[in-house]
Amino acid sequence: MKPGKSLLLLCAALLTGTVCAADDAPAKKIVVACCGDSITQGVGVADPARESYPAVLQKLLGDNYTVLNFGVGGRALLRKKDPYSIGNGLNSKPDIVIMALGTNDAREENWKQFGHEFVGDYKNLINQFRTRLSREPEIFVAVPPPIFADRWQLRNVILNEKIIPAIRQVAKETGVTLIDFNTPMLGLRKDFPDGVHPNASAAAKLAEAAAKAIRESQAAKRKH
Image (cartoon, rainbow, N blue to C red; front, side):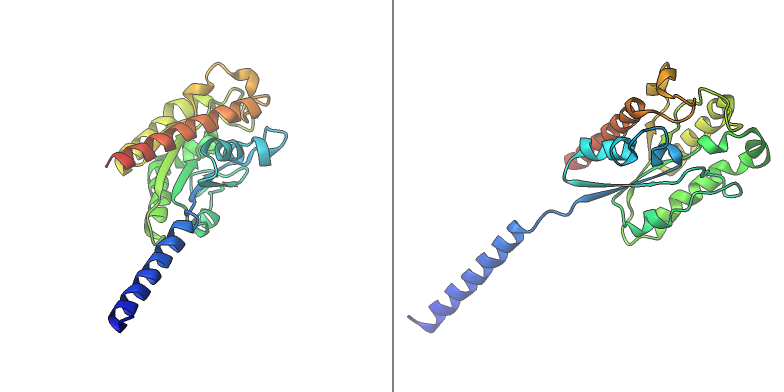
């Protein structure tokens, strides 16, 4: 066989092997970081590892996704009142971030003192995800579920009249996608045993709302 032909065949074999290896390599999973308070964490369900909204979201999205639960009980959006830390969320290097905060900001005293800083604090949190990672993730912000009972000094009137409009303003001004965790829960008082935290049935509905938003966004990207 002529040397030139042998070299050509060798190159072809190497190229073929490279292509096969690439085809056999597992696809990179899409990492979803669920950042939030005790509702995200899974307070209110019997088994947070299986019944919290992030756990159910994992089941709904399937094996192409890795959904991580970074919910921390008692955390607020306002930086001067038990603020949520995004350190773990950043370290996960997410492709998608769901931020579900605001319920613990509905305390009357907290809002009266620092409510005017809510929009700016939320924008700052979003900006950290946008600037501190090598690749900017897609960010979703959730409107919190209703507060059915005024417990722990939480007030649904503050949530409805102040916090939800502020979150909608943040979404509009920053260009992030809004997820409505509030409307699907209206009328489901029985699924919030303590008036604040969803049970497994309601948590599953939160997961459905999140999955719908993510799927719609992914489908829109594929069209472009």
